[in-house]
Length: 260
Ligand code: HXC
Image 1 (cartoon, rainbow, N blue to C red):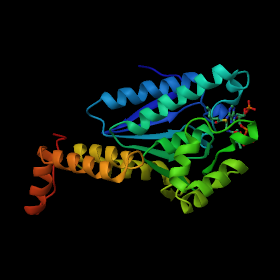
Image 2: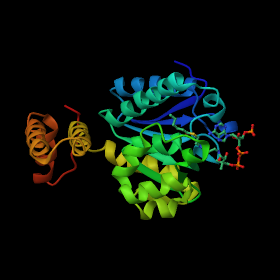
Image 3: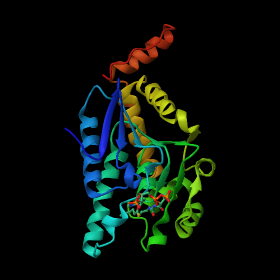
């Protein structure tokens, strides 16, 4: 399938998805969201691909937010629909049973910061700036920002960022737990690919179950969560990868995982 507003590039079993509207700093309009959705679904179905990296085209932005020109004329019913579309796409990324890394190569604002927060791991360039400036536009965050930001940085910092609408640097974002690593701008993508390849070298089913388990930790109580963890942990012993991983350790060699 060919896309207009996203570019897809494969590096062996790692896929890079570029949000590609550099003239408007990769702002998200409806078509872009639908193309992200289609690209993520096709990544999910491709058994040769293990890890997805999402980044922005050009040198300035990851995503500078949802498209303000597109949102300006909306009425309340259209606004709700617009919010639900973003939730659908971002929840798809969050719940996808393969890891997704955000390589934040510049501005990640509003819906852009929310897109990064829907990913599993956030790596940022030193040039990146993050923020939730929605209240400066007369709206609340609408693609999950009030929820995912609160979980990542706690209610106090989330309120500070959302109420002030101020942008923060990658270093500050790292300090408060909004991004996981910061790299020199030039090496960000290379580092993201390295991390993706490291993840891809591990047992795929075990990685997949780990994502499910970590995601559910914020949704259900501890008793239920540990019961589910024990279930999926147990299920790993039904995989060839478990025998391979532990067998390789005992035989002092490198494991070769088949995802079976
Ligand atoms: C539409 C955008 C845009 C956006 C930038 N552009 N962000 N267009 N929607 N979110 C466009 C500009 O209009 C401009 O187009 C071009 O990109 C370059 O941007 P400049 O403003 O000229 O660049 P600069 O002065 O360097 O400032 C960069 C910036 C600023 C600080 C990132 O562009 C900015 O504040 N953008 C808006 C950020 C924001 O508020 N995001 C949240 C959006 S609301 P022209 O044609 O003039 O060259 C949101 C809601 C999510 O995300 C939830 C929805 C349910």
